[in-house]
Structure formats: structure tokens, C-alpha cells
Image 1 (cartoon, rainbow, N blue to C red):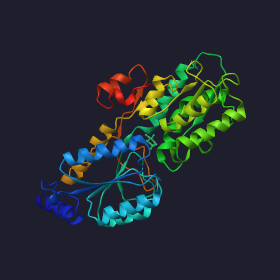
Image 2: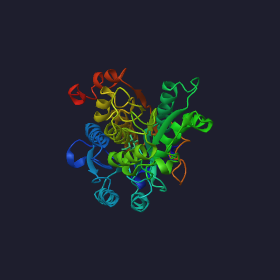
Image 3: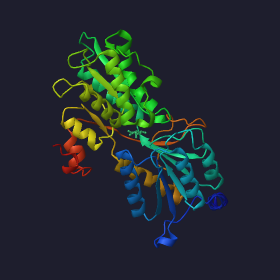
Image 4: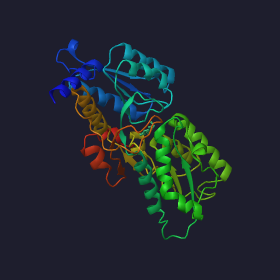
Length: 359
Ligand code: BGC
């Protein structure tokens, strides 16, 4: 027994997996946190939360944002983190498949990698994944539309359009498939009609989850189908997140829609702009993913790695990154509408009233 313990300790020391948090700045273990962009609200919050929580736990933090979703910048920043002596890397990838090379260096230096929110694909350097239940996000959106349109008993048909995220983001497929797992039977039976004809993930994808791209695609759909308050009726839009929903809202408002005739429109993230749209009647729901919870969970993971303890995970079957299953911790996404946004967002201290005040 003693021998086994000694071998384990020797292994841990040799791989450098256990390190000290330390008190004085110089002695603190450094954690690298790589975020994709500062142009979407949620990643600023994620970065700020991660930094604050890691520092409170006694670590030094190298937090970097990769410009505006610039892959070479993200690769260079991660390389610097490795060279700079980071003990753990926490990475929200821009493109899940672009980090294979740089992460070989992390592995060669025994630096554990935690994929943050988005799974990093095709790299055996990824040790853990922390996210929300991404399939469930889509299921909640699909169920919302099913129930609001009363698809189980109403005769229909209803006109719906679909819009989802960046093809390089592994989450996007989970969101889309989650929503389709609820909506597809109705699409197949003809109760839901998608008049644009754009039904596949590739047709509904939005590069970089960009609001402008979403708006452009939607303006084209409005024109080609003839949707409008006085034209063809549009009953619902399944948008996978808030940044794309905002593009849809812009296009619909541009086409003359008002809150009196606005179609159902889903979202995700509870971005300030989307909560305001909800208050204005220009988006129907969102999904609250409390980035404080995710950050706290990742700090737990880092602490466990630092101490050589078992890392807390709650899913060992869903996320295969091409090199095998990545042990994951999936937080719970929460359905948000005008009925519960105060409790979720204001009472919990996530936003102030002023953050989401509408003029
Ligand atoms: C995140 C979403 C976010 C989207 C765009 C996804 O990976 O899970 O919360 O809306 O990226 O930033």
C-alpha cells in the first residue's frame, strides 16, 4: 500500500500535476484563460467571472480575448500561456477544431486543458469539459414553440423558420438537434412549414454567431418568401441564441413587424439586448445560463487538479471530441421569459434594473 502511494506521489510530481495556489503573487500558480471574443456580451462576463473567481481562490490569472473571434490570435495567446508557465489552461475555443497543434505543446508540458463551454475537438490534450447541457437548451426552445403553438392539438399548419450558430462551434449542432428533436415530427407531418426550404444545419448556420449575418440571411428569407405583417404569416422563428435572435428581430422590425404581430422568437443567454427585446415584445423567451455557476464549477475543477483530487464531473457519455469521451460537468440551463426574468436576473444580482431598462 505504502509503495503504491509513493509511486502515485512520484508520478504526480513527475507529471507536475499538483501545484500550490500560493499567497504572495510571485508564488501563485498561474492559470491561462482563453476567451473567443469581446464582441459578444456573454464572453466578457465569462472572462471577468473566471478571473475574479480564480484570483479569489489564490491563483494568478492570464486572461486573453482572441480579438474578434480571430483563430490565429487565439492560437498565439495559448502558445504564450504555455511558454509563460500556466499550470492549467481554460479555453473557450473559437473553432473547436483549430487548436489541435498548439495543444500538442500543452500535452508535452503536462498542462491539463479544460474546454470551457465549447468542446475542443480532435485533441487528446483535453482533460475535462465544463459547459451547460447544450442539447437541453435546444429541447427547451423546441418545447416552448411546441407548447405556444399548441402543436399537439392545433390543426396548423404554422410557418416557422430556423436559425442557428457557427459551424465551427460544437455546441451549435447540439442546440439545433435538441430543438429539432422536438420540432421535427411536426415538420415531417407538415404541421410546421418552413417556406424558405432551409432546414439543414448547414443552411441555417450563422458564421461567428454574428447578428449582422443573421439579419442578412433573414432579410433575404423575408423577401424571398414574402413574409410580412401584411404578407405571408410568419408564426415562429427558432433561433438558437440571442445574438442571432437579435439579427432576426432587426430584420423583422425593418419589415414592419411590431409587438402587436411579432412571431414567436426563441433565444439563449439572456443578453441585455435580448432581455430588452423581450420587454419590448420583440423576442419571446431566452435561456439563462448563469456564467457565475459555470465559472465556479471550473474553479472547482482547477482546485481539484491542483490538489491531485478527483475532478468533479457529472457526465461521462455525451461529449466525444474525436479522441474519446471527455469527462464533463454540465450545468443546468434555465428557461427565461417575462414571467421569471426578475427573479433570475435582477434578484440574483446578475443585472441591475438599469442594465435592462427600456426607453
Ligand atoms: C455558447 C452560447 C453563445 C454562442 C455565441 C455558444 O458556444 O454556448 O451561449 O450564445 O456560443 O457566443
